[in-house]
Image (cartoon, helix red, strand yellow):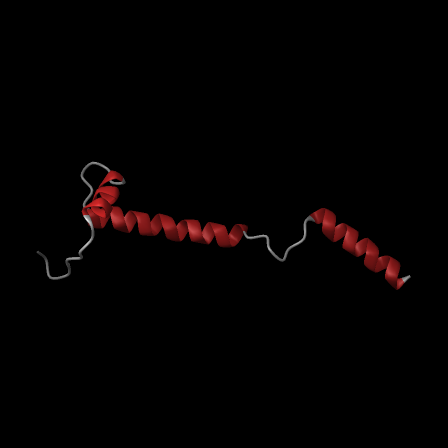
Length: 72
């Protein structure tokens, strides 16, 4: 084993699940690193696509119209 590696204990079921996600020639490290990268990308996309607290254009137009009436 190389100096920068470690051993982790996981169940055989978990190991088999990781193995199923792998491509030919990938090590467990390759698989885990790829899954981590994909998860981080998904998290970033989810954060960018989060619309909580924002209005649609239609809602914004209605709000502006209401504000203009209140000011008149």
